[in-house]
Image (cartoon, rainbow over all chains, first blue to last red; front, top):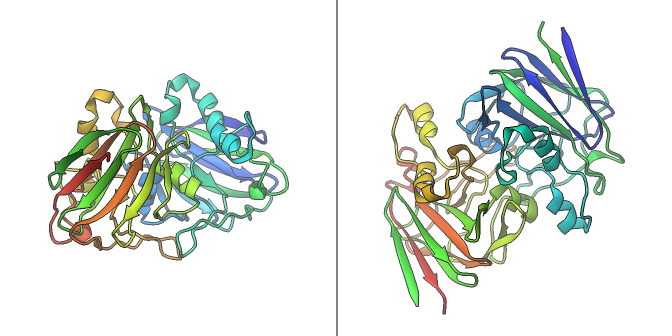
Length: 198
Length: 198
């Protein structure tokens, strides 16, 4: 049985995953970043932690067979397939209200951090303690001098990364609303989450 | 007037800083990493955020004149002097109980995350939501392929990084207890915090 969740451009979406299920994060029209978050369904204080992923993987890149870990360094998710060119980011925080206000003078732009806050409002996590994201399809590699390069996502229409849940999870995706720099290409577009358990 | 706090090797220490005061983080015997944390003294939910520092600086390195920001992207600290070779880390989480247990089979090793938890126990921050550190003097540069290189801290005895408080702060330093890999050299040593307000 397959379950699907279409996340509209600029918005967030949430779904439950059982241990062992496969989740496809699909770049519907291409060039679209998906900020991704995961929580242990049995204890939502345990979250997917990019900092602990960096330390466990000993790198800032992602690839097939990588296990992504929680703040307790416990494996939560395994990457089982990636049809994109493997361009993802685990260093940047979500875009947030302050990013658009301070950077561009826009006071109330939609943003990935607010999308996460809305999606998990029932968890009661204070705004300050919302986790940082895994930025699937985000093109911000680190140059040899330690600076970030910022480019448009090279993901093609239909590109997907496939994840296996290693515990019961609640996951959130945010179809990044950043429409000022061309990080998401010429326009922001949808992200689709597909769950397969067969 | 000068205030000093000697942080014993492997332990943590905390002090208050008034806006405008200068804080010297001193590598007493050299090669010693100091995990560093800061909180807005008027609202301790606002913390120094390495993720938001990376995004604001657009790099993973630190230098003089850099402003380090909070989870609200507000400048908390300015780097005003650095006598070391500028080797610091803003990508790694603190070492924690799980790091020593999973990595080395040691169940109850001292660790920077527990040092932070003890130092700010009165804040009531749940363990999971303790902030990630700025790792002063840590030698973990990122290679061109995105992997971390791990080396001994090159800091010399007496090397210091000098920070200006841009708001009233509560800061915590942890003299990293990692004595397995030679990240801190042949042995772990003390860190000294010196506050100058003249």
